[in-house]
Length: 145
Image (cartoon, rainbow, N blue to C red; front, side, top):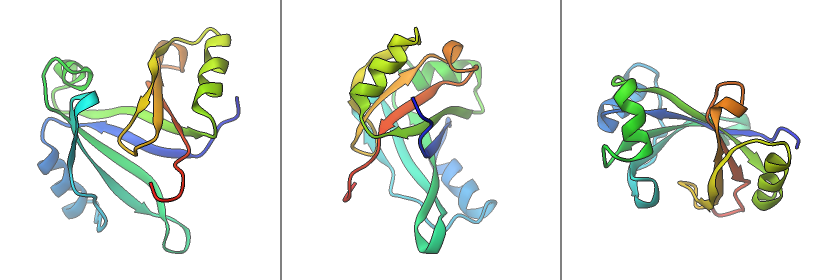
């Protein structure tokens, strides 16, 4: 397994609109995507796009507000009610090969690959197996995503 590009940092928040205002007003963000509901993960989500090279998008900040207190992000916020860094996401060229490799190393993959907020396949690896960080692995988005 080779480390791929860091796609985004996931930040859990109890109030998505307040977090968007923070990134715009305090951090100077000028490119924030329209929030949408990702039913499969029970979150309302948007992306803060940081500038990349020559006008491209750099690493994103994914803001996550639970739509249910019983969702994984809702349960996570029970212990951290103000929110904070939830996960880091790295890209891989082939999600199924990456899953096989992580499992072969004895890493705990949390569920089967599923479609994430970028519209590409993802899975998570347990923080106890990833140096204390919940890690999302996502297939590199194809053009148009």
